[in-house]
Length: 193
Image (cartoon, rainbow, N blue to C red; front, side):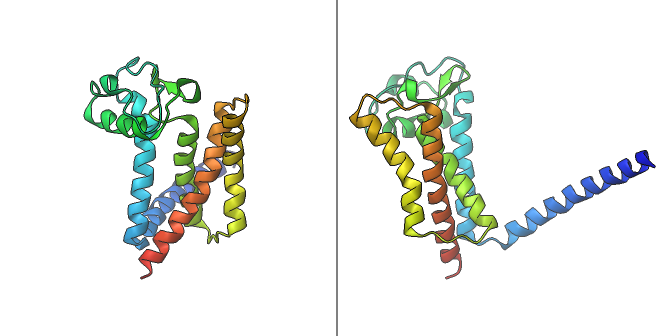
């Protein structure tokens, strides 16, 4: 009996997964063009960002530390393949890329710092959350979500305090999640026009 019920349970799990796949396809077909566009852009950008250190040979980047708004690492970036070059170029112009404030893997520094990575991850999480639940953003909620990133960054700027990468990632994640919810609300309003 135990073996039979285990087999039936396994069969039901497989059937449930198949139903879930069809449900995802059905949900995709009901999404408006702005929601689809936002979904693809957010997931696409996050995927490129997270996998960028694997798009180049191990040990290619070295220390990318620089300043925001300046193309600091041209000699390193110009040697990359076109996809990695684009991602690292955008990161170089829009992020300080300080090595001690960035994650590294595949012996390559990521194209954005830990806080920016948290923001991009939060955008996807917030968008996906708002896709599942009807969410209302209020000004107090937005302010509450921005307080951690504002405090962590400002205290670090004005004092000797040095934040940690996990704190940077989490504060970015919180701010990004609220922004992701806002993107979903905007996409819904555009699709309903």
